[in-house]
Image 1 (cartoon, one colour):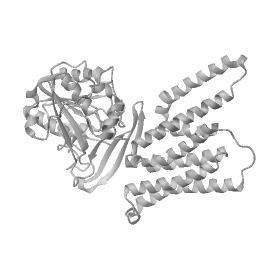
Image 2 (cartoon, one colour):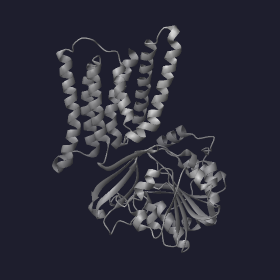
Image 3 (cartoon, one colour):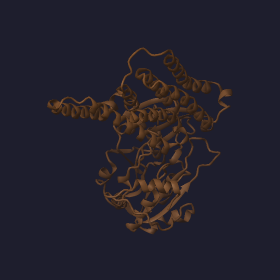
Image 4 (tube, one colour):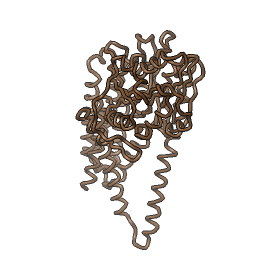
Length: 468
């Protein structure tokens, strides 16, 4: 009973917290999701244990239970990515799990019906309120984005209280939770997407927003919760790299500085995104993207969405599909002038790309004065110091920069960026150091990550306390 009550409370609190995604409440969401998932699975296991058959049929019981696990795993890994455009199976299963609770017999009282009607009406009102705000500038001016989100949380909280009061009426409770979930996802979805697709590696969306400072329509690419690029579609702006790849950011600076050294440069980029780095390619340059997700390559090369590769690059762009650690190992050593490591998805840290062994592989691909730039911007984890420690263990030269976007810049023109530049020799970073924006970080006692050791919890603590 106590576990069931905890499940109900956690589930409805989690739903109201979903709308907090736009305000950066990621740690709170993580805790709530884990707690909700834990109590949901614990309740289901309790129900299964309570319904187990007599001892002479336990073999059949455990066989069917194992078979159910296989079916569920296959559905999540194989069927859901092909059927759903978003990660719909997660909220769907959480809602359906409500039906596994013990049912209360008899006809519902008038109080229960009134509470259900009130909760459903309140839950439906939230997305309607957002739609009214969108099409009424005068109403939209009353709330800030943060204030609007908090208001939605408060309103859904009232519906959650109503749901909890009729928790014994399982069907009614489940119906309210389902509508609240839909409303919360509508509020927390961010942009209106013109394209949504999903692969094994996550959900990709493309939205079209308008920014007159960038000439009109801007196509925005998001993979999970991470912005992976944006492109203005007006002819005068279309070939200007944006966001983390703008000319003002460390990634853009590195590309320009390497190109200033010679008329032809060989550049490799781990993580294709919208293909914005292709805008830097000159006719004599060689540029290769190392991308694990074929869907990313397909979208970034489709002129209907992005034209960095098809129209802006001067000459062909090569894409190598597969895990970058494996595909880059087949590249010729000592041939690259610049490597940009930017393989992040939904704020997930590809830890195997930041280990001592990985960085050693990047350095082997560089010319003696070549440079590898690690893009380390992250909202939740401090991942710079392990990378610095790994580079110094390998004897590489390193310089660091944090670029803060200009407050007067258009929203999608540039983004605050943290990066670490590495080179096999100090001479490789001489012109970076002369720039003045790249600086040497103080010595660190943080242990470098390896293929056998990664400390994400330590990275979380450092981010919360400030870098150490």
